[in-house]
Length: 154
Image (cartoon, rainbow, N blue to C red; front, side, top):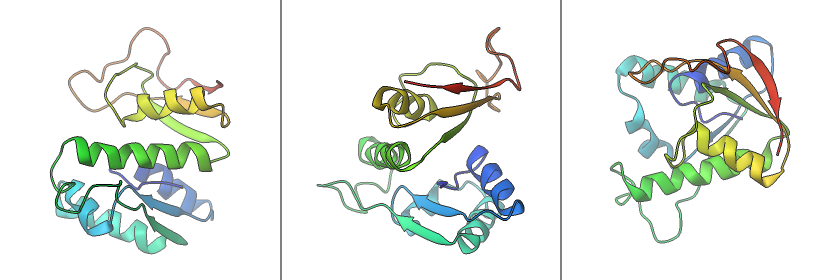
């Protein structure tokens, strides 16, 4: 299962397809709304390619009380959709794969939030591969170190 977001989601989806595994795409909102998250025509094209390669495409329903208009801009309503995606992945995956720098964050619906929720829920293990982010604060901390991989449990 993958949300097919730019970066690690798409990388893992490509590797899964290269290995002959079935890909289930789980989108946090209707596809037409989600497409606005892709910054370039090339990234949108890659997203559409992966959607067409998926054996199943699930568009999560809108959170109660919200409409396509309320999730059209970044903000609380859109974040709730990403929270629903995190909950879906945490409760419906046997193993959660996290390509993550390991940095704690209070940012809702990000990788740190999903890993924390998975561990607190006790729904199963998470396998973390430590990798940096391509952004200003993306540098590694002293521990864990780049390319380490390990199991995380509740």
